[in-house]
Structures are given as structure tokens and as C-alpha cells.
Length: 414
Image (cartoon, rainbow, N blue to C red; front, side, top):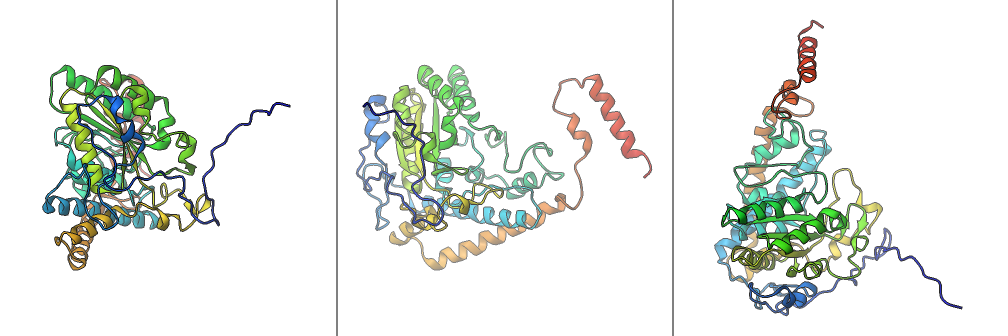
């Protein structure tokens, strides 16, 4: 009798109460993956799309063809940015638990994904972040007070109370508005890059999304347009293993790497150790050089791990082993860069502790400033009239009447 077909349902390798299992993860030794020229054909990137680009070895030494050979001062800046991002995250989660914020999303364990890439790009490049890329805000010099005011939806909220917390934007810093609709930033980044090429501009676009969002149609539309029109864009897939409570296999991670979808669409693919600051920097520079010289876009998969909950609304202990973060084989990006600097003789535990104290005080001072402009429970409050602005070029009559009714109600004696 012929065997009946069976439906395959991807399942995580371990559930709560079971030992963590990362045997599915395909690793390459540091320095083992070759580095093609950035002008190469996408056909020459199959090895980089399925291997794992790594620079830092187990002894925290930089090795191999992808070593960007950064100066110690630049590495120290990167360490500072990543540490500030983590301390900012921790303070904001504490504030949410105290009822001062409605919602927050940490990037613990993923700091190199944003910071190293942001440092490898130029200030004029347009960035289209996802909701876990707060490191990009730090690299671009965004004041912490402004970010906190957006989280608080207070009188200095850049979004005027109209967006969820963490949905920042900054035209001055070339940071596009973050959207809660998954993957919309991918085609937006490609469109911006196409327009820049049409206008003959030198700057490129870069965007980020989670591996779960690659199941969205917008992801594939973006890759198609980027390949066909050779748009100067870097398309980053942050594979942190979990899309909320859904394991990365559900988005197709069992079949092949997410980076391999680049060559499938006619784009180069790079699969990178996302917790290796040097590797992320080097891969981003490779893709940026390619885009600036007319070679078109690149798809980069950043293999990392979401060490914290998906958001303050999530409890990861319900779907993965409690000690899974400690068993992640690619370690912690901050600790790895710290140990690399120590190995170079350019850092120490004492200097690290001093920097942590300095940055923690900076975050605390910013918070004290931000709450002066209002919190969820204390004024001052946003002007309610703001809800009628920036929606229509000319306010329709029915909204004009609603605004007048609201004003009259607020002016009436209690």
C-alpha cells in the first residue's frame, strides 16, 4: 500500500520544562566563510548565504577575511552605544512595570544588529527600522528624553499621542516612522532607494524586519523590486529565533537559511553572526559599498537571539525553556565586544563598570527630565485638538463640527 502524505507542522526543538536545544543551528568557525568582492554576481554568494560570517573566535580575537580592522576607539564607541541601549531598555521596562508606560519592547541580546550596522552606514543614508532597533536611534544621536516622551505619549511626544510606544521617527536623523504593521518598511525602503537612484543621489536605504515577518507578502514584493531595479538598499532579516511565541521554523527556517532567499530572488545573500559586532559591521559595509557603486541590493540574515520577552505583554516561559537564553551558542554581543577589547589591551572590567555607572546615570537624568512633560497618570496632558491636525490638508466640515463640540464640552462647567 502506498504511504499517505502527511502534513508537516514545524515545532520548536524544546518546550518549557525541557533542556534547551540549538542543534538545529548551522554554525561556521570564525573566519571560515570567504569574502567575495562586493561587485560579484549574486550567484557567487551561495556560500555566504548558507554559511555563517563570523570574525570573533572563541578567544575573542578577530580573524578571517571579514575582519573590518576597526580602530580601538571605534570599537569603544560601539560598546558604549550597545551598553546605553541595554540600560535604556532596562529602565523603560521597570517604568512599564511601575505603571508609568503602557507598553515596551526590549532588544536585549540584539544590540549589535542595530549598533554595528548603524555605525557602518553614513548619516545621509535613510533607515527604515523595525520596533526592536532602538540602537539605531542611539547611533544617530537621538536624545533619550525625546524617545522617552514618545513612550510616555506626553506633551513632547513626537507622534502627538497617535502611535504605540517605541514607534519613533526623526526626519532630521533620517529615521523613517516605525509601523506596527509588520514588514511594511521593506517595500518602503526599496521605494526610497529607487527614488534616490532616479534622482542620482549618493545615499542608500537600509531596513530591518524579524524572521517571522518574512512570511508577509511585503517581504517578497520588496525583494522582487530590489532585484529587478537594482535598488541601492540593504534588506536585513533579524533572525532572533522567535516571532512572539512562534519558532523560526514556522516562517521557513527549517528549509534553508533566510539569507538564501536573496539568491532565490537574484540578490546576494549574507548570513551573519548577529552577536558579533565586527561581523555585522563588515557585512553591512560590504552591502553598502555594493549599493553605492550601482550593484543593487543585498539581503542580510542576522542570526541572533531574543533574550528577553517579545514585549511587556509577553511571557516567554510559556513557550520556551526558562534557561534557553543562557544556552544560546553565540553568546552576548556586549560581552563579546568587551572581551575583544580587553584582549587587545584597550579595555578592562574597571573601565566597563565605570562606563555602566555613567550611562545608567545618563538614563536616569533623561527620565527625570522626560516626566516633567507628563506621564500616563500625571499631567501635563496633550492638547486634545491635536487629534484633528495632520490628517487632512483641509479639515472636513464634519470633523470641524466635532472639534467645536469637543471644545464646548471641555469648556462647560463641571
